[in-house]
Length: 108
Image (tube, rainbow, N blue to C red; front, side, top):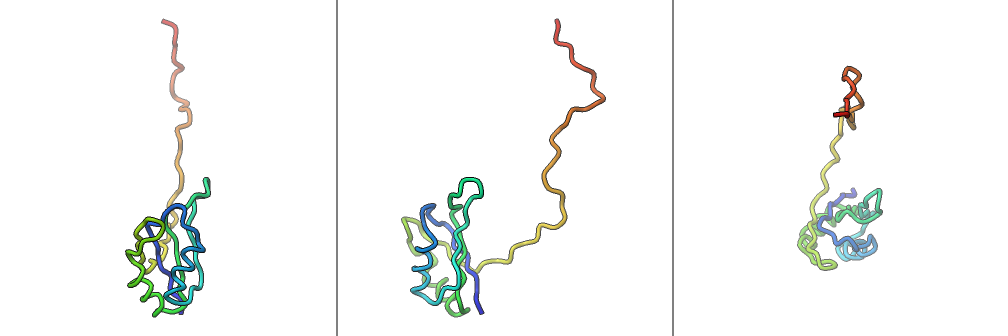
């Protein structure tokens, strides 16, 4: 069964192809994803690599955690499940104009 790994402390210029080649040296890679900022498209400095087997994932963690790539020391660990955000309200009010206020007078 495939196991997803978290890869942190990536150089902002590190490409998915670089990660795929590095992790392929350890075992079969199912998928690679470098997380990018929605607005700028720039890497956020972390990503995920899904290894084909649990054994390959364990080997990748032991061999590649602390490995230097593009001048940065990688943090490789088992990815945690994404937490649900629940039904909490998002965003916020933003202070519309209160109707009970008297208009200000600026003439002095």
